[in-house]
Image (cartoon, rainbow, N blue to C red; front, side):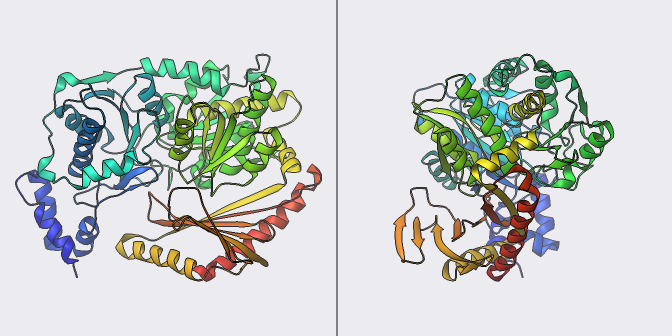
Length: 575
């Protein structure tokens, strides 16, 4: 049966202020497809950790001209409240997805109709460039039309504030309040063309200068010509900047996966354009193997996530996970800062509560504080904004995101790609490798291994099931993880940390979020949270133990992976 609220919502989309094509599509749903109608209208699209994402199509729970228009109108109203008597300006970028160019123009039209000056890129561009542009042009906010690594049928709308970071409290709640009070007939689509200014490549040039300054390790005597790089943009935006930044840095032996170089919202060569998925980099790995490449680099469609593969101890290409890439990159940045006498008392690195705890240990090695935020780079950007007197060196998260310095205020695969290649070149010049450096770090901090288990639950029923899983875990938390007693539970929704042995509770100094973290007596950690941008519930597992010598890595790694297998079995009781 059709949910009554969904039918009532759908009927309102037959009113005259919706265009004829939209009314026709809604009529078809009302008369033929009950399940799709319900999913399209049973709720409004919501802002998550990465803004608003959803399936494209008609309906309140879909991304379309009207849901985007409503958000743009709400944003216009909110900006006028926040910046009265000012000429407000907004930068807009878009990625390779279907309708991204059309949607970006729709948003620009609404903003300009409300008297707001718009800087709109004339071609697709990476998300980190949008963050950079907001600060470079001193805009009041920025927007990028993207659904990151989601499947082809998705698109999205991410909003950045004047610091270049994504919306955080209190702006996010203020914007949502404006949006929620609007009706669709209040959207002003009548563009003022003279307020829309097109951006060409001028911002690209400024970005390259800062990226080279921040992402290069500063070694001028490296033999970069003999570093073989295989790069794939996975049909996304990074093709516009990554090859060029590598060329400018002196890396000329770059081999692009041609079959994946053309921007294409269908992502025809991959099941998922997500560098977190090994299959997404299969073509790049095969090409790298055939030419004896030193490193493989792949980015997601909007070029904020980066996946890499490097040669392991046996000389075979091995895909690294986001945690492994993050700690090596952070260590090199810390070493660079130390060599340049740039580590200060107020320096810090950053990560997230569901990423590898190894980042905390890495900070201790250099006497630098590691701050942890909730999932999403907006929280790391907020740290930089909240502590302007402090010196941010770099940081990342397990989901393949990394930020080098603070010139971009979001994860940045363009600069991270440059840094990764510089690390390969520097390591080779010292007789080592990227991979060997990771193992050497393990001998100093302890050996860490992680795994992400992600379970998809689609639709209204799936949303309810995810909610039930989280509720059940709060009511009946696991007593054992991998044969070890659970000794602590952190609930970020109630902002309480519970010592299970003593039953002593203490406050958590983070914004409320639907996240649970369990700690076992041996230091193992499991976090669980619903995704803010996809219909998924995620389980993050981290285990560790000492690594006395680098030669012991293979055996220790096997022990830790077996422990993860046991913990994964324990987690099945929560599902």
